[in-house]
Length: 490
Image 1 (cartoon, rainbow, N blue to C red):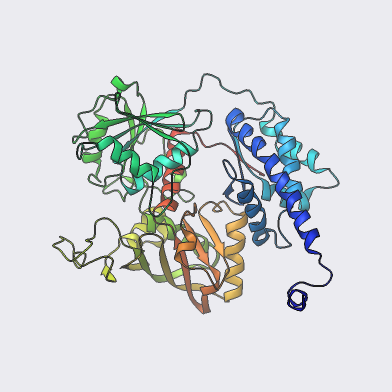
Image 2: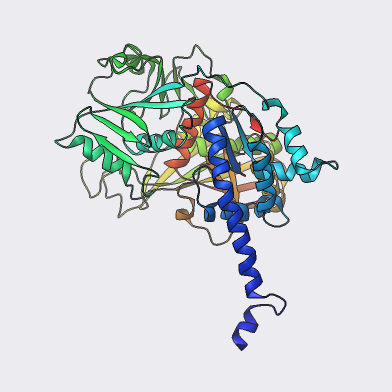
Protein backbone atom coordinates (compact mmCIF):
# COMPACT_ATOMS: atom_id res chain seq x y z
CA UNK A 1 0.00 0.00 0.00
CA UNK A 2 2.86 2.40 0.80
CA UNK A 3 4.31 1.84 -2.68
CA UNK A 4 0.92 2.58 -4.30
CA UNK A 5 0.69 5.85 -2.42
CA UNK A 6 4.07 6.87 -3.77
CA UNK A 7 3.04 6.16 -7.34
CA UNK A 8 -0.50 7.62 -7.35
CA UNK A 9 -1.32 11.12 -6.06
CA UNK A 10 -3.66 10.90 -3.08
CA UNK A 11 -6.30 12.94 -4.93
CA UNK A 12 -6.64 10.39 -7.73
CA UNK A 13 -8.92 7.42 -7.20
CA UNK A 14 -8.06 4.40 -9.37
CA UNK A 15 -11.75 3.54 -9.81
CA UNK A 16 -12.47 7.05 -11.11
CA UNK A 17 -9.66 6.71 -13.66
CA UNK A 18 -11.04 3.40 -14.88
CA UNK A 19 -14.59 4.72 -15.02
CA UNK A 20 -13.48 7.69 -17.14
CA UNK A 21 -11.62 5.31 -19.47
CA UNK A 22 -14.68 3.07 -19.85
CA UNK A 23 -16.83 6.09 -20.75
CA UNK A 24 -14.35 7.22 -23.40
CA UNK A 25 -14.07 3.69 -24.77
CA UNK A 26 -17.86 3.49 -25.07
CA UNK A 27 -17.90 6.74 -27.06
CA UNK A 28 -15.15 5.40 -29.32
CA UNK A 29 -17.26 2.31 -30.02
CA UNK A 30 -20.20 4.56 -30.96
CA UNK A 31 -17.96 6.52 -33.33
CA UNK A 32 -17.00 3.49 -35.44
CA UNK A 33 -20.31 3.06 -37.35
CA UNK A 34 -20.56 6.83 -37.90
CA UNK A 35 -17.07 6.91 -39.39
CA UNK A 36 -17.84 3.93 -41.62
CA UNK A 37 -21.18 5.26 -42.86
CA UNK A 38 -19.75 8.68 -43.69
CA UNK A 39 -17.05 6.97 -45.73
CA UNK A 40 -19.12 4.37 -47.57
CA UNK A 41 -22.20 6.50 -48.25
CA UNK A 42 -20.68 9.95 -48.74
CA UNK A 43 -16.97 9.41 -49.47
CA UNK A 44 -16.11 11.48 -46.38
CA UNK A 45 -12.67 10.56 -45.01
CA UNK A 46 -12.15 11.42 -41.33
CA UNK A 47 -8.87 11.83 -39.47
CA UNK A 48 -7.27 13.40 -36.40
CA UNK A 49 -4.21 15.42 -37.35
CA UNK A 50 -3.49 13.11 -40.26
CA UNK A 51 -4.22 9.89 -38.35
CA UNK A 52 -6.91 8.11 -40.38
CA UNK A 53 -9.95 6.84 -38.47
CA UNK A 54 -11.56 4.54 -41.03
CA UNK A 55 -11.48 0.88 -40.02
CA UNK A 56 -9.78 1.58 -36.70
CA UNK A 57 -10.49 -0.14 -33.37
CA UNK A 58 -11.80 1.74 -30.30
CA UNK A 59 -8.32 1.67 -28.78
CA UNK A 60 -6.80 3.08 -31.97
CA UNK A 61 -9.35 5.91 -31.91
CA UNK A 62 -8.47 6.70 -28.30
CA UNK A 63 -4.77 6.70 -29.14
CA UNK A 64 -5.44 9.17 -31.97
CA UNK A 65 -7.21 11.47 -29.51
CA UNK A 66 -4.30 11.15 -27.11
CA UNK A 67 -1.83 11.92 -29.91
CA UNK A 68 -3.63 15.21 -30.58
CA UNK A 69 -2.10 16.71 -27.42
CA UNK A 70 1.09 17.24 -29.44
CA UNK A 71 -0.87 19.48 -31.78
CA UNK A 72 -3.43 21.16 -29.51
CA UNK A 73 -0.84 22.05 -26.89
CA UNK A 74 -3.26 21.90 -23.94
CA UNK A 75 -4.14 18.28 -23.36
CA UNK A 76 -5.57 15.50 -25.50
CA UNK A 77 -8.55 15.95 -27.80
CA UNK A 78 -11.80 15.35 -25.92
CA UNK A 79 -13.55 12.40 -27.52
CA UNK A 80 -16.88 14.00 -26.62
CA UNK A 81 -16.03 16.89 -28.97
CA UNK A 82 -15.09 14.69 -31.93
CA UNK A 83 -18.14 12.50 -31.30
CA UNK A 84 -20.39 15.59 -31.38
CA UNK A 85 -18.89 16.62 -34.73
CA UNK A 86 -19.42 13.14 -36.18
CA UNK A 87 -23.05 13.06 -34.99
CA UNK A 88 -23.69 16.40 -36.68
CA UNK A 89 -21.98 15.26 -39.87
CA UNK A 90 -24.00 12.04 -39.98
CA UNK A 91 -27.18 14.13 -40.11
CA UNK A 92 -26.03 16.13 -43.14
CA UNK A 93 -26.18 15.19 -46.81
CA UNK A 94 -22.49 15.69 -47.46
CA UNK A 95 -20.46 15.43 -50.62
CA UNK A 96 -17.02 13.83 -50.80
CA UNK A 97 -14.51 15.48 -48.47
CA UNK A 98 -11.63 14.99 -46.07
CA UNK A 99 -12.43 16.19 -42.54
CA UNK A 100 -9.84 16.46 -39.77
CA UNK A 101 -11.69 16.31 -36.44
CA UNK A 102 -8.70 17.55 -34.45
CA UNK A 103 -8.35 20.63 -36.61
CA UNK A 104 -12.09 21.20 -36.51
CA UNK A 105 -12.00 21.35 -32.70
CA UNK A 106 -8.92 23.60 -32.74
CA UNK A 107 -10.63 26.02 -35.15
CA UNK A 108 -13.81 25.95 -33.07
CA UNK A 109 -11.80 26.97 -30.01
CA UNK A 110 -10.29 29.89 -31.95
CA UNK A 111 -13.25 30.97 -34.05
CA UNK A 112 -16.41 29.55 -32.45
CA UNK A 113 -17.66 33.05 -31.65
CA UNK A 114 -20.38 31.88 -29.29
CA UNK A 115 -21.72 29.17 -31.60
CA UNK A 116 -22.33 25.65 -30.41
CA UNK A 117 -20.01 22.96 -31.77
CA UNK A 118 -22.95 21.61 -33.79
CA UNK A 119 -23.64 24.98 -35.42
CA UNK A 120 -19.94 25.55 -36.07
CA UNK A 121 -19.74 22.17 -37.81
CA UNK A 122 -22.78 22.95 -39.97
CA UNK A 123 -21.32 26.33 -40.96
CA UNK A 124 -17.85 24.93 -41.67
CA UNK A 125 -19.15 22.11 -43.87
CA UNK A 126 -21.78 24.22 -45.64
CA UNK A 127 -19.86 24.11 -48.98
CA UNK A 128 -20.44 20.35 -49.22
CA UNK A 129 -23.77 20.09 -47.40
CA UNK A 130 -26.80 18.99 -49.41
CA UNK A 131 -24.43 18.28 -52.28
CA UNK A 132 -25.84 15.90 -54.86
CA UNK A 133 -23.79 12.76 -55.35
CA UNK A 134 -22.90 11.75 -58.88
CA UNK A 135 -24.42 8.29 -59.04
CA UNK A 136 -23.06 7.75 -62.54
CA UNK A 137 -19.44 8.10 -61.46
CA UNK A 138 -17.64 4.80 -61.91
CA UNK A 139 -14.21 5.72 -60.57
CA UNK A 140 -10.84 5.41 -62.28
CA UNK A 141 -9.42 2.00 -63.16
CA UNK A 142 -5.90 1.33 -61.86
CA UNK A 143 -3.38 -1.25 -63.07
CA UNK A 144 -0.26 -2.07 -61.07
CA UNK A 145 2.57 -3.15 -63.36
CA UNK A 146 4.84 -5.04 -60.99
CA UNK A 147 3.94 -6.40 -57.56
CA UNK A 148 7.03 -6.03 -55.40
CA UNK A 149 7.50 -4.04 -52.19
CA UNK A 150 5.90 -0.83 -53.46
CA UNK A 151 3.33 -2.56 -55.64
CA UNK A 152 1.90 -4.59 -52.75
CA UNK A 153 1.78 -1.56 -50.43
CA UNK A 154 0.01 0.44 -53.13
CA UNK A 155 -2.49 -2.40 -53.39
CA UNK A 156 -3.11 -2.30 -49.64
CA UNK A 157 -3.67 1.45 -49.66
CA UNK A 158 -5.91 1.40 -52.73
CA UNK A 159 -8.03 -1.41 -51.27
CA UNK A 160 -8.29 0.47 -47.97
CA UNK A 161 -9.47 3.59 -49.80
CA UNK A 162 -12.02 1.86 -52.05
CA UNK A 163 -15.02 3.30 -50.19
CA UNK A 164 -18.06 3.26 -52.46
CA UNK A 165 -15.88 2.78 -55.54
CA UNK A 166 -16.04 6.35 -56.83
CA UNK A 167 -12.31 7.00 -56.60
CA UNK A 168 -9.34 4.88 -57.61
CA UNK A 169 -10.30 1.26 -58.33
CA UNK A 170 -7.58 -1.38 -58.39
CA UNK A 171 -8.54 -3.62 -61.32
CA UNK A 172 -5.41 -5.58 -62.22
CA UNK A 173 -1.80 -6.39 -61.49
CA UNK A 174 0.68 -7.45 -64.16
CA UNK A 175 3.59 -9.75 -63.30
CA UNK A 176 5.85 -12.33 -64.86
CA UNK A 177 4.83 -15.86 -64.00
CA UNK A 178 7.43 -17.10 -61.57
CA UNK A 179 6.51 -20.72 -60.88
CA UNK A 180 3.71 -23.19 -60.36
CA UNK A 181 1.37 -21.88 -57.72
CA UNK A 182 2.31 -18.33 -58.66
CA UNK A 183 -1.12 -16.90 -57.86
CA UNK A 184 -1.14 -18.43 -54.38
CA UNK A 185 2.34 -17.08 -53.71
CA UNK A 186 1.29 -13.57 -54.81
CA UNK A 187 -1.73 -13.77 -52.52
CA UNK A 188 0.42 -14.92 -49.62
CA UNK A 189 2.82 -12.00 -50.06
CA UNK A 190 -0.11 -9.57 -50.04
CA UNK A 191 -1.68 -11.28 -47.02
CA UNK A 192 1.48 -11.32 -44.85
CA UNK A 193 4.35 -8.84 -44.66
CA UNK A 194 7.34 -9.20 -42.36
CA UNK A 195 7.67 -5.42 -41.96
CA UNK A 196 4.15 -4.04 -42.25
CA UNK A 197 2.19 -6.88 -40.72
CA UNK A 198 -0.93 -8.70 -41.95
CA UNK A 199 -3.32 -7.42 -44.59
CA UNK A 200 -6.24 -5.59 -42.98
CA UNK A 201 -9.18 -7.52 -44.34
CA UNK A 202 -10.12 -10.68 -46.18
CA UNK A 203 -8.34 -12.10 -49.19
CA UNK A 204 -9.59 -14.91 -51.44
CA UNK A 205 -7.99 -16.57 -54.45
CA UNK A 206 -10.07 -17.33 -57.56
CA UNK A 207 -7.75 -19.70 -59.40
CA UNK A 208 -10.28 -20.47 -62.14
CA UNK A 209 -10.34 -16.82 -63.25
CA UNK A 210 -6.83 -15.90 -62.12
CA UNK A 211 -8.13 -13.26 -59.70
CA UNK A 212 -7.57 -12.07 -56.17
CA UNK A 213 -10.61 -10.83 -54.26
CA UNK A 214 -9.52 -8.43 -51.51
CA UNK A 215 -12.21 -6.79 -49.36
CA UNK A 216 -14.64 -7.16 -52.27
CA UNK A 217 -12.19 -5.82 -54.87
CA UNK A 218 -11.83 -8.26 -57.77
CA UNK A 219 -8.24 -7.89 -59.00
CA UNK A 220 -7.26 -9.58 -62.25
CA UNK A 221 -3.76 -11.08 -62.25
CA UNK A 222 -2.26 -10.80 -65.74
CA UNK A 223 0.94 -12.59 -66.71
CA UNK A 224 3.14 -10.77 -69.22
CA UNK A 225 6.80 -9.97 -69.75
CA UNK A 226 6.13 -7.37 -72.46
CA UNK A 227 4.63 -3.98 -71.47
CA UNK A 228 3.18 -3.44 -74.94
CA UNK A 229 1.43 -6.77 -75.42
CA UNK A 230 -1.54 -6.66 -73.02
CA UNK A 231 -5.07 -5.85 -74.15
CA UNK A 232 -6.60 -4.54 -70.93
CA UNK A 233 -9.97 -3.91 -72.53
CA UNK A 234 -10.56 -7.65 -72.77
CA UNK A 235 -10.69 -7.61 -68.96
CA UNK A 236 -13.18 -4.74 -68.91
CA UNK A 237 -10.48 -2.20 -68.04
CA UNK A 238 -10.56 1.11 -69.91
CA UNK A 239 -9.10 4.60 -69.67
CA UNK A 240 -6.91 3.26 -66.86
CA UNK A 241 -4.04 4.73 -64.91
CA UNK A 242 -1.12 2.29 -64.99
CA UNK A 243 1.49 2.47 -62.22
CA UNK A 244 4.86 1.03 -63.23
CA UNK A 245 6.59 -0.25 -60.07
CA UNK A 246 9.36 -2.15 -61.82
CA UNK A 247 11.74 0.75 -62.45
CA UNK A 248 12.90 -1.04 -65.58
CA UNK A 249 11.75 1.75 -67.90
CA UNK A 250 12.36 5.32 -66.74
CA UNK A 251 12.35 7.37 -69.92
CA UNK A 252 9.48 8.48 -72.11
CA UNK A 253 10.26 5.98 -74.86
CA UNK A 254 10.19 2.96 -72.57
CA UNK A 255 7.16 3.99 -70.53
CA UNK A 256 5.23 4.86 -73.69
CA UNK A 257 5.09 1.12 -74.41
CA UNK A 258 2.31 0.94 -71.82
CA UNK A 259 0.31 3.57 -73.71
CA UNK A 260 0.26 1.31 -76.76
CA UNK A 261 -1.93 -1.15 -74.88
CA UNK A 262 -5.72 -0.89 -75.35
CA UNK A 263 -7.28 0.36 -72.10
CA UNK A 264 -4.33 2.41 -70.76
CA UNK A 265 -4.64 6.20 -70.77
CA UNK A 266 -1.86 7.39 -68.47
CA UNK A 267 1.28 6.06 -66.76
CA UNK A 268 2.84 6.85 -63.37
CA UNK A 269 6.39 5.75 -62.58
CA UNK A 270 7.39 4.99 -58.97
CA UNK A 271 11.01 6.02 -59.50
CA UNK A 272 12.81 9.17 -60.69
CA UNK A 273 11.97 9.82 -64.32
CA UNK A 274 14.58 10.64 -66.91
CA UNK A 275 14.62 13.30 -69.63
CA UNK A 276 11.62 15.60 -69.82
CA UNK A 277 9.32 13.49 -67.60
CA UNK A 278 7.85 15.59 -64.78
CA UNK A 279 9.05 14.41 -61.36
CA UNK A 280 6.20 15.17 -58.96
CA UNK A 281 6.48 15.44 -55.17
CA UNK A 282 2.95 15.72 -53.88
CA UNK A 283 2.41 18.87 -51.86
CA UNK A 284 5.19 20.66 -53.75
CA UNK A 285 4.61 20.67 -57.49
CA UNK A 286 1.56 18.44 -58.00
CA UNK A 287 -0.28 21.43 -59.46
CA UNK A 288 2.04 21.05 -62.45
CA UNK A 289 0.18 17.87 -63.41
CA UNK A 290 -1.90 18.56 -66.51
CA UNK A 291 -4.66 16.46 -67.99
CA UNK A 292 -2.60 16.05 -71.16
CA UNK A 293 0.48 14.67 -69.33
CA UNK A 294 0.45 10.99 -70.35
CA UNK A 295 3.49 10.04 -68.25
CA UNK A 296 4.41 11.29 -64.77
CA UNK A 297 7.08 10.27 -62.24
CA UNK A 298 6.50 10.23 -58.47
CA UNK A 299 10.27 10.75 -57.90
CA UNK A 300 12.02 8.71 -55.17
CA UNK A 301 11.27 8.02 -51.52
CA UNK A 302 14.21 10.17 -50.40
CA UNK A 303 13.28 13.06 -52.67
CA UNK A 304 9.73 12.96 -51.29
CA UNK A 305 11.07 12.94 -47.73
CA UNK A 306 13.43 15.91 -48.03
CA UNK A 307 11.81 18.28 -50.54
CA UNK A 308 8.86 19.38 -48.33
CA UNK A 309 11.20 20.22 -45.41
CA UNK A 310 13.66 21.96 -47.71
CA UNK A 311 10.84 24.01 -49.26
CA UNK A 312 9.58 25.13 -45.84
CA UNK A 313 13.05 26.06 -44.57
CA UNK A 314 14.03 27.81 -47.80
CA UNK A 315 10.88 29.96 -47.83
CA UNK A 316 11.29 30.96 -44.19
CA UNK A 317 15.06 31.33 -43.81
CA UNK A 318 16.66 30.89 -47.24
CA UNK A 319 19.20 28.17 -48.04
CA UNK A 320 22.66 29.16 -49.28
CA UNK A 321 23.82 25.57 -49.80
CA UNK A 322 23.95 22.24 -48.04
CA UNK A 323 24.59 18.51 -48.00
CA UNK A 324 22.08 15.68 -47.71
CA UNK A 325 23.24 12.39 -46.19
CA UNK A 326 20.78 9.53 -46.32
CA UNK A 327 20.97 6.65 -43.85
CA UNK A 328 18.85 4.24 -45.86
CA UNK A 329 17.43 0.80 -45.13
CA UNK A 330 18.77 -1.89 -47.44
CA UNK A 331 16.68 -2.75 -50.49
CA UNK A 332 16.01 -5.69 -52.80
CA UNK A 333 18.71 -4.67 -55.28
CA UNK A 334 21.42 -5.55 -52.73
CA UNK A 335 22.75 -9.02 -51.96
CA UNK A 336 22.00 -11.07 -48.84
CA UNK A 337 25.57 -12.37 -48.87
CA UNK A 338 28.62 -11.25 -50.83
CA UNK A 339 28.12 -11.81 -54.54
CA UNK A 340 28.64 -10.08 -57.85
CA UNK A 341 26.71 -6.83 -58.34
CA UNK A 342 27.00 -4.34 -61.18
CA UNK A 343 26.95 -1.45 -58.68
CA UNK A 344 29.91 -0.37 -56.59
CA UNK A 345 29.93 -1.86 -53.06
CA UNK A 346 26.35 -3.15 -53.37
CA UNK A 347 27.61 -6.67 -53.94
CA UNK A 348 28.58 -6.92 -50.27
CA UNK A 349 26.16 -8.47 -47.78
CA UNK A 350 23.34 -6.01 -47.00
CA UNK A 351 22.41 -7.47 -43.56
CA UNK A 352 26.05 -7.48 -42.42
CA UNK A 353 27.43 -4.16 -43.62
CA UNK A 354 26.93 -0.44 -43.82
CA UNK A 355 27.33 0.21 -47.53
CA UNK A 356 28.33 3.60 -48.86
CA UNK A 357 26.56 4.33 -52.14
CA UNK A 358 25.34 7.16 -54.30
CA UNK A 359 21.95 8.89 -54.32
CA UNK A 360 20.46 11.18 -56.89
CA UNK A 361 18.03 12.70 -54.38
CA UNK A 362 20.02 15.90 -53.83
CA UNK A 363 20.18 16.72 -57.52
CA UNK A 364 16.60 15.52 -58.02
CA UNK A 365 15.45 18.22 -55.58
CA UNK A 366 15.92 20.77 -58.37
CA UNK A 367 13.21 19.11 -60.49
CA UNK A 368 10.64 19.91 -57.80
CA UNK A 369 12.34 23.02 -56.36
CA UNK A 370 14.24 24.77 -59.16
CA UNK A 371 15.33 27.52 -56.76
CA UNK A 372 17.66 25.01 -55.06
CA UNK A 373 19.37 23.86 -58.27
CA UNK A 374 23.11 23.43 -57.75
CA UNK A 375 22.93 24.21 -54.02
CA UNK A 376 22.91 20.66 -52.61
CA UNK A 377 25.19 17.66 -52.63
CA UNK A 378 24.21 14.20 -51.46
CA UNK A 379 25.32 10.70 -50.57
CA UNK A 380 23.82 7.60 -49.00
CA UNK A 381 24.71 4.84 -46.56
CA UNK A 382 22.72 1.60 -46.76
CA UNK A 383 22.37 0.09 -43.29
CA UNK A 384 21.25 -3.36 -42.00
CA UNK A 385 17.59 -2.51 -41.30
CA UNK A 386 14.75 -3.63 -43.60
CA UNK A 387 12.71 -0.41 -43.56
CA UNK A 388 12.64 3.24 -42.39
CA UNK A 389 15.43 5.59 -43.36
CA UNK A 390 16.76 8.95 -42.21
CA UNK A 391 17.85 12.03 -44.13
CA UNK A 392 20.34 14.36 -42.45
CA UNK A 393 20.03 17.87 -43.88
CA UNK A 394 23.19 19.91 -43.22
CA UNK A 395 22.26 23.42 -44.35
CA UNK A 396 23.77 26.89 -44.45
CA UNK A 397 20.99 29.45 -44.06
CA UNK A 398 20.71 33.01 -45.29
CA UNK A 399 18.99 34.10 -42.08
CA UNK A 400 20.26 33.22 -38.60
CA UNK A 401 17.98 31.34 -36.22
CA UNK A 402 17.92 29.19 -33.10
CA UNK A 403 17.10 25.55 -32.42
CA UNK A 404 13.87 26.41 -30.59
CA UNK A 405 12.72 28.80 -33.30
CA UNK A 406 13.39 26.27 -36.06
CA UNK A 407 11.58 23.50 -34.19
CA UNK A 408 8.54 25.67 -33.47
CA UNK A 409 8.39 26.75 -37.09
CA UNK A 410 8.46 23.12 -38.28
CA UNK A 411 5.88 22.11 -35.66
CA UNK A 412 3.50 24.78 -36.91
CA UNK A 413 4.24 23.78 -40.50
CA UNK A 414 3.37 20.15 -39.73
CA UNK A 415 0.13 21.26 -38.09
CA UNK A 416 -1.29 24.12 -40.09
CA UNK A 417 0.40 24.45 -43.48
CA UNK A 418 -0.46 22.95 -46.85
CA UNK A 419 2.40 20.50 -46.19
CA UNK A 420 0.68 18.82 -43.24
CA UNK A 421 0.35 15.54 -45.14
CA UNK A 422 4.01 15.60 -46.14
CA UNK A 423 5.73 16.81 -42.94
CA UNK A 424 5.19 15.22 -39.54
CA UNK A 425 6.91 16.28 -36.33
CA UNK A 426 8.06 14.40 -33.25
CA UNK A 427 9.80 15.70 -30.13
CA UNK A 428 10.99 12.74 -28.09
CA UNK A 429 14.39 11.62 -26.93
CA UNK A 430 13.35 7.97 -27.11
CA UNK A 431 12.18 7.35 -30.70
CA UNK A 432 14.06 4.96 -33.00
CA UNK A 433 13.57 3.86 -36.59
CA UNK A 434 10.98 1.13 -35.97
CA UNK A 435 8.66 3.73 -34.40
CA UNK A 436 8.08 5.16 -37.87
CA UNK A 437 7.05 1.97 -39.67
CA UNK A 438 3.69 2.71 -41.26
CA UNK A 439 4.04 6.50 -41.18
CA UNK A 440 1.85 8.01 -43.90
CA UNK A 441 3.89 11.21 -44.08
CA UNK A 442 6.69 11.78 -46.57
CA UNK A 443 9.03 12.62 -43.68
CA UNK A 444 9.03 13.15 -39.91
CA UNK A 445 11.20 15.90 -38.39
CA UNK A 446 12.97 14.69 -35.23
CA UNK A 447 12.95 17.90 -33.19
CA UNK A 448 15.02 16.38 -30.39
CA UNK A 449 17.97 16.00 -32.75
CA UNK A 450 17.84 19.46 -34.38
CA UNK A 451 21.11 21.43 -34.24
CA UNK A 452 21.26 25.14 -35.02
CA UNK A 453 24.00 27.71 -34.47
CA UNK A 454 23.47 31.08 -36.09
CA UNK A 455 23.14 30.27 -39.82
CA UNK A 456 24.19 26.63 -39.56
CA UNK A 457 21.34 24.11 -39.34
CA UNK A 458 21.26 20.32 -39.13
CA UNK A 459 17.89 18.57 -39.37
CA UNK A 460 17.14 14.87 -38.96
CA UNK A 461 14.16 13.58 -40.96
CA UNK A 462 12.84 10.02 -40.54
CA UNK A 463 10.82 8.42 -43.32
CA UNK A 464 9.20 5.09 -44.03
CA UNK A 465 10.83 4.62 -47.40
CA UNK A 466 8.21 2.00 -48.34
CA UNK A 467 4.84 2.96 -46.86
CA UNK A 468 5.27 6.73 -46.53
CA UNK A 469 6.45 6.88 -50.12
CA UNK A 470 3.55 4.70 -51.27
CA UNK A 471 1.12 7.14 -49.64
CA UNK A 472 2.74 9.96 -51.60
CA UNK A 473 2.38 7.91 -54.81
CA UNK A 474 -1.34 7.41 -54.15
CA UNK A 475 -1.75 11.16 -53.63
CA UNK A 476 -0.20 11.76 -57.04
CA UNK A 477 -2.53 9.11 -58.52
CA UNK A 478 -5.53 10.93 -57.01
CA UNK A 479 -4.35 14.17 -58.60
CA UNK A 480 -3.90 12.51 -61.98
CA UNK A 481 -7.40 11.04 -61.75
CA UNK A 482 -8.86 14.29 -60.33
CA UNK A 483 -10.45 12.48 -57.39
CA UNK A 484 -8.95 14.57 -54.58
CA UNK A 485 -11.84 15.78 -52.38
CA UNK A 486 -11.80 19.18 -50.61
CA UNK A 487 -10.29 19.24 -47.10
CA UNK A 488 -11.94 20.70 -43.98
CA UNK A 489 -11.64 22.81 -41.94
CA UNK A 490 -10.73 25.41 -44.50
